[in-house]
Image (cartoon, rainbow, N blue to C red; front, side, top):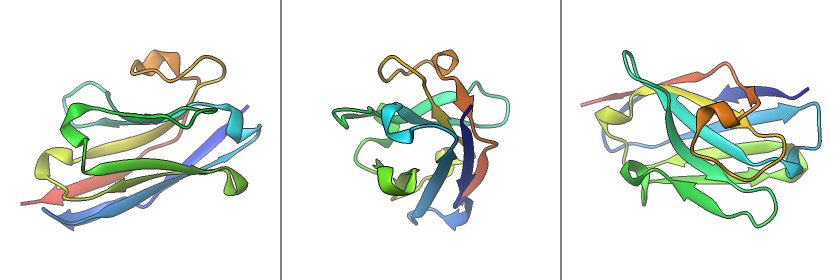
Length: 124
């Protein structure tokens, strides 16, 4: 079992920055592809960014490329999402996810463990 706990969300003005963190416990964190998804009211959960376990390769949805950066600290069992130049359309609940086995994926059902989510609100 893997437990994921997100933190770092909040209210920020457009153009500002936030850094989300996801603390993992329960298994060998470094073996898992990790990802961030988000869900805005009335919309489906959307892939934001992923980080592979071995190569450390990263993938981003087009709308956040150049603004968001995903990273992990295996020693602290933590994955981060640095979000810069935030826009009102980035407003959503952000979820951390871990996948047991396999490689990164853009598809939410491929992920086995989820955090409870953290709210990010960007005002215009």
